Structure formats: C-alpha cells, structure tokens
Length: 348
Image 1: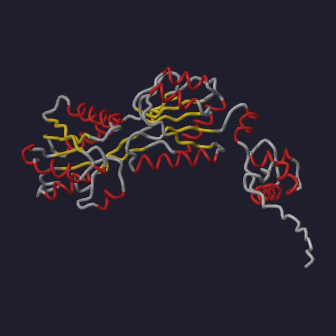
Image 2: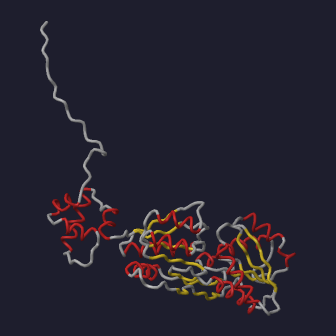
Image 3: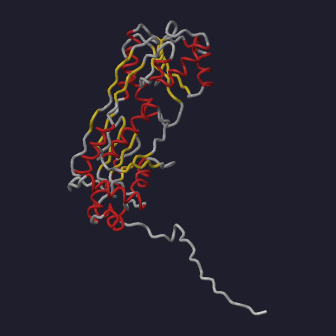
C-alpha cells in the first residue's frame, strides 16, 4: 500500500501578551494622523500649546484603541522632575472628616496633572521614613501628623522633591507648614461645657495608637480653657470598642462627672450609647460634646453637640503644592488653617 507524504504548514502560535510589541507614541500619531509632538502635548495636558478639541479627541481615541499610556519615567526625564505627589499612608485610624479631606485633595491634585501615590511605610518613622519616600523621587511630599524632622526634609529635597508640606500641630524647618490648631478644638468644647454650667468635666483620650498627635493638643486646649476656673478635669482613656465604653459607663456615677468632651463625634456617639444603656441621662446628668460635626451626630437622640472643624479645601492645598513645585526656591511658609466653632445641640 503506497504511502503519500503530506506536508502540513505550521500555523504560527498566537503571540503571547509578553511578545506583542508595546504601543508607542509613534503608533498613536499614525493612527490619529498627527505628529508625535501633538500626541505628547495632548496626553501630557500641556497648556502652553493650543490644540483643537477634535484633535485632542482623536489622539485620546487612538491611545485608547491601542492601549497606549505615557511612560512616566520618560516624561520625568523630559521635564526634569516627576509629577508624583507622595502622601504617606496615615499610621492612625482615619475618621470620616479627615478621609473626606484626603479624597478632595487627591482629586484636586489630579486635576492639576499630578499623580498622587500613597506610601505605606509600615514600621518606618521620621527621617528613616523620609529616606524610603525619597527613593521614589517624588516632586512633592505631603506629610500628615508629626514625626518628620528637618533632616528628613533635607533628604527629600536633595532627592529632587521641590516641595515638602506638613499638616500638623507644629512647624518643621525647611517645609511648608499648615498648622492644625487642635488645641482650639478642645478649648471650644471645654468653654461650651463651662458656659452651660458644667464644672466636673471629663475628656476622652483615645487608646488607639497614632492618635496622640490629635488627642494631646485637644486635651491641652481643655486644660487651658479651664485654667483658673472652679472646674475640674478628669482624663478618660477609652478604646473605640463597645466593651470599653460599657466599662467606663459602669463606673460613671462614681466619677461624678456632669460634662464630657469625647474627643470626636464617633467616640461621643459610642460613649453616649453606653451611658444611656447604664441609665445615665444625657444631658440631664451629663452633657456630651464631640467634634467633627458628622451627619450621624444629627441623627443621634439627643442630637449631638459638636465642634465644627474647618479644614483647608483640597483645591487650596493642591494649588499651594503646585505653587511650591513651580517655585522651589521660595521660602517655606507657615499658615494656620484649622478653624473651630461650637455647634450647640440637645446633648449639652
């Protein structure tokens, strides 16, 4: 039986994602029918060159079709600096007010063509953390709370950071500082309780790690407001847990307190619920005031008195960062940006 040899042509295997060529700006330019320079102007949001809206739309559509994204490192080399703004991830529990502020800030920086990167330097603090941040070569660094010192600022600037901005209760040499006067929050709360006739005043001090830079100034503000008066002050360590609040409420009558500043609205709501469960009347037996002016406080019964905190807008802070980046030689400034006013409701 004769055998017939048949040659079957090899079908080339489909290219794996790793083998496919990476689209370039030249590919985008060809598809959009424009120059590579135009692609660069459009995708880098360059405002110095006027480009028509139909052309911009064509470039964006071509880039999307090809899956092209600009190379951040190459863009940094051309500009002489990156567009990365580094924000160390907070090492403390972030409340609703502060979380909203950070979101607004990131959105505002994005509109100014900055890329916001949150850096989780777990276990690193102060100048050691600054060295880890510097490795990423950010154009600006925004540091919340305390811990960064002048040496850390120097490390960041030598690595190419054009702006270092701190948000906290103290200024730092070499950095633009937004002073957050947390003492004013405690001062307002204590003054309100005293004016309402309360003389045996407790102050909640959160037990959670990382909140000391917020709670200590608020406690000092209460102390300053009551200094020289006939009122007494009692510190009340409290963890943000129902069991901790229940234990504190169980010995409330022994403490003999008729007013309490509960650090913020979340701790105030936690403590109020525990006091009510223990049969302590709010405000008849004990007046309660929080801080942050959260909407949930208005839903509580009785409605929660609070200290309304006015934080800088995300847009204003983003513009400050942008000015500092564009003028790195300008002398660092210090601005007090936190306002505090009492909102009196039923709980006090």
